[in-house]
Image 1 (cartoon, rainbow, N blue to C red):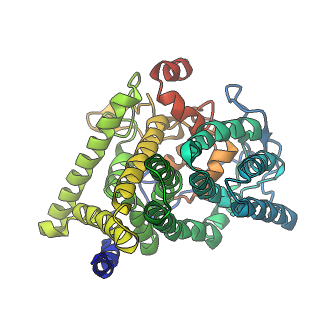
Image 2: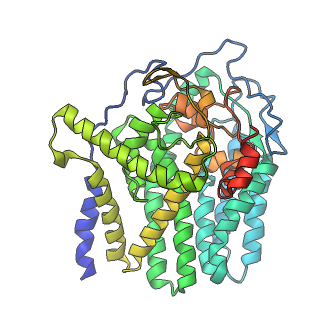
Image 3: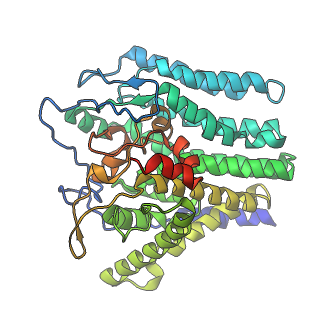
Length: 460
C-alpha cells in the first residue's frame, strides 16, 4: 500500500548531508568576501555612512522612498503596528469565499498592495518581508475559482506586481555600518527564512492534496502545478539561496532542503563554490553573455551548473581523500525523490507529476532571474586565470520596493555578490552598480522576448 512508503520517504528527507562545505566561515578579507559566510561591512567616510543611493533617472518608478532619511533612523512602534495591520488585512483576504466573491477578493488584495506605498520602511523591521504570504493566497484562491482563472497567478506576478513596482516605487535607503552589524544578529530576520522551509513543504502538501482530492480538471491541475512552482521559485529557492550562504548548520540544512523541494539541490554546491568565485567571467555558466538570448542561456546554465557542481564535488572528495559514496549530489536528488514519494504516499499518485511540473517552473523562474543579474557584465582578467576582485559594478541592481520585499532583497544583488556573508536585511544599494530600469517581475517577461530585452538593456 502507498501508506507503507510514508516512513521510509520521510526518513529520507532527513538524510541531507550535514558535512561542512569548505567555505570561509570565521573571517573574511576583501579578497574572500565574495564567497565567505562571514559578513563584511564596508567602511565608508563619516559623511557617506548610511547615505541613500543617488537618484537614477532611468528607473521606471513614480516614487522614491527614503531619499531624505537621516542615517541611523529607526522604525517607531507605530510603523511596526501599521505593518502588522497591513499583514492582518492581507491574511484576511484568504477568508473571502470564492468563486462567489472573486471580484471582492481581487480588488481588496490588489488595493492593499498599492496602499503599501504609504507604509514607511527603514529596513529594521522584518514585517515587510512577510508579504511573501500573498503568493500562496493568490495561487490557492485562483485554483478555487477554477477554469482559466487557475492561471491568474501569472497575471498577478507579471502584470500586477510590475504595476506595483512602478507605482510604489524604489527604496534608496541605506543603513549605517553600525546598524548593519546590529541587524545582522537580529534573530527575527533569520527566523523568517527558517520558517520558509516548513511553509514551502506545507504548500506542496496542500497542493498535492488538492491535486488528488480537489476534483480538479486537467486544466486546473496545470494551473495548480504552475502556481505552486511560482511559489517555490519566488520564495522557496530564493530563501534557500539566502540560507545556503550562512555559516550555521541548521540554515544550510534547511537551505538545501528548500533547493531539493525544487529538484535543484546541486545548485548549493555550484553557486557557493563556483558562481560566486567565477561570476562575470567566461568560466561561470550562470553569467549571461552580452547579446545572448534567454533561450540560448537556459540550456547552457542548467547543464553548466550541474556539470560544475559535479566537478567541484569530485575535487572535494579527492582533496579530502573520501570515497565516491560521500558525493552529496546524488543524495540531493534522492531527497527530491523522497519529497515526491512522501507527498504521493500521503495524498495520492497525482502528487508526483505535480512535484515534477512545479520543480520545472521553479527552476525556469529562478534561472530567468540568473539571466538578469549579470547580463553582459565582465571582470577584467589581470593575468591568465586571475580576475579583478568582485565589485558592485559586476551585478545589475534594482531598488524596487515591492519585489525586494517579496524576494528577500535579492534585487540588491551587487552587495550580495561583493559581500556574500551579509544577511538580506543588511544589503545596501550602491551608486557604482549598474541599474535595471525595473524589478525582476517586469524584466523577466522582457527577457522572454529577446528583441524587447535588447532594446531596453543594450543602451544601458
